[in-house]
Length: 469
Image (cartoon, rainbow, N blue to C red; front, side, top):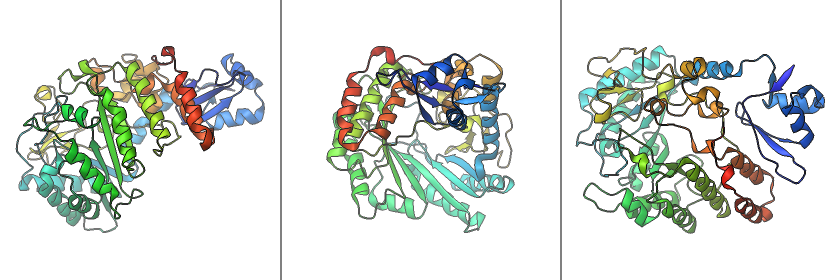
């Protein structure tokens, strides 16, 4: 006996025949449903559906065994995944505590300090010890800030000493860098790719120039857009740049002050023919960081979800490469909810969250696990939010317990929930429209796509951008 999976999102009718789309958040698959099939599912008559359709619905996770406790299945998969990490040790390193920018929404306090040579040695020993004990096959480093490139000499030292310590050429040590892009000149980019094996670069542009510069100014109050944009442009326009091997991601943080600058940024990147060279341009709403109340300048999540979908439609119309797949199953929300990875700041402090270092707000909130100086080889078994999935499974303290999006969201940020700030992602408010959007991309002939998307966008209604649960 089978039942309609609780973790299924069904769209409104997509045509005059009342046909719909069913999306399994457990598998990421989308299946068209006839009006009759939909009625059978809604009335608990899955057994009346033709066998060949039943088989497809079972395979895609739309139908599940009638006796299955789906919440327990999802959470237990998450817990098991966090324990295995699939052979890769993920670590985050902040080589510097300094940043050139003074963004109002940043929750960090910056000082001119970088990790010491002594701490580099202790850091390398800790990572090596975890690597050996965990029987990992590779290491992936997230170079993070403040601004990591202000600690470039320290990045070099960490990578070289770690490589020498492992002394096994078959072990791949790669990484990603989140950088403001001010110092990312072509020679630095080449060094990071070729010598530190960084394969992903994430840089923030908060809209077109005037909007960005009012958001992301230097500590002296000066502009930063032109320098950052030109650095990106030179890199991705170079004949040596290979977008198939190196991912350039642009992130746009949005609030009420720069929302009008997002569309001009999308068009600028396309006009300069960079849109096919970068890996992604994505958008995220400003949120509270370190108790700075930045979320008071945010769009509502309903507003943001609507605008985000409109920006993505524009990207498709302008020729940005776009994935038709919907959100994939997420078995680990962040380092706080599972795995052995940790964050190390420039002072040797150890955390399991990327948003609590360099913040006075979190100093007395028990987020620091220990220090490299005193705890070089210590295993921390009781980390903040390591019990997140168990809490979601065993209590209804947070709405994630009953949310149909849990398999693709995982609850998002447990720290935010604990602080009383709902962490629901934007697609909580536009998931049905997003399903239709991706389906149109996958099924519409290229010659008709622009017209179809325009009609789709013009048919938006406010009622379709409300919380889905």
